[in-house]
Amino acid sequence: MKIAVLPGDGIGPEVTRAALCVLDALSLPGLTLHEGDVGGAAYRRHGHPLPAETLEIARAADAVLFGAVGDPEFDTLPRALRPEQAILGLRRELGLFANLRPASGWPGLEELSPLRPELARGIDLLVVRELTGDVYFGAKGERAGPDGKRQGWDEMAYGEAEVRRIAHIAFRAAQARRGHVTSVDKANVLETSRIWRETAIDVARDYPEVALAHMYVDNAAMQLVRSPGQFDVIVTGNLFGDILSDQASACVGSIGLLPSASLGERRTAHGTFGLYEPIHGSAPDIAGQDKANPLAAILSLAMLLRHSLGRDDEAGRIERAVGRVLASGPRGADLGGSASTDELAQAVVQELAKAD
Ligand code: IPM
Ligand code: MG
Image 1 (tube, rainbow, N blue to C red):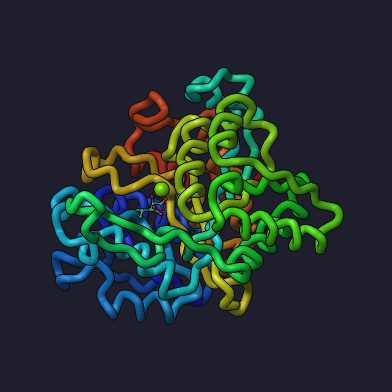
Image 2 (image 1 turned 180 degrees about the vertical axis):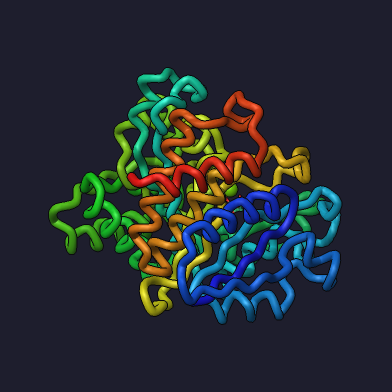
């Protein structure tokens, strides 16, 4: 089995290294790692944020372990060359249309949430975000506006087939959870959302045991801070999902704890091909200081083992080890402690060695 490792920019390399320490500690047989350049790091070396050889490494693998991309040094480059294009290009080229972003409160961390502890404690939700459509990938450009001044425009569109396949992912996820899907849209204003909602209702017929509710995105943003415990699975489009998943992560306490999986249709020997990344970004302000929280990257590795390599046992072991570190082990700066990235990785490795 092959894992493509794309560390990227900022804290990406540090947290990816930490995740690889944990992988190493599992001593899984028959696993090979293939590293590639991506983001600003790739632009520096190859003149492009997603070089063809990196894409090839990713395509040839069973799963991609991704760090982060983004570097203020490249903020003024034309959009096509900015580091962010690497992740957008990977999602598009690899057909990774389903983004799973679980967010749940970890016991002991409630005090770190900006929400009241009793609200934070109740969070156990999964954002299922459509990842290869919407205004992200529609036509876009600049034109002369009615006043003769420059006007930027981006096309937002969703086809039924795109909605259908992401809806199926959400309903199946809900079957394995608490049986509740909230479809988030803006159907009171957008035609895109009308198709979204009608399609979600149609797909729901295949899942009579799952309850489907609809919520406008503005209300969903409000409900997420007012009573986040009401959500089980949230399914939504690319743009709304981008925003709501950041909001959900903040409600939990630290963005440094949330992993994500981006899945497509390609099957691997033991699961589904996917790309796994912490949902935090490259955090250039703390890059290279060994103080980034590696737990989101480590939890992303657990998702990789579960979804792409069929290693449910090891995934569970990692998640329980992380839980024990969070409950009683050292904490990093984002959680009010002073442990380094490396110390946190070692703490997880030590917990892994204990029987659970
Ligand atoms: C995310 C990020 C990306 C997105 C950026 C880096 C393009 O915010 O994965 O949520 O908007 O999808
Ligand atoms: Mg985002």
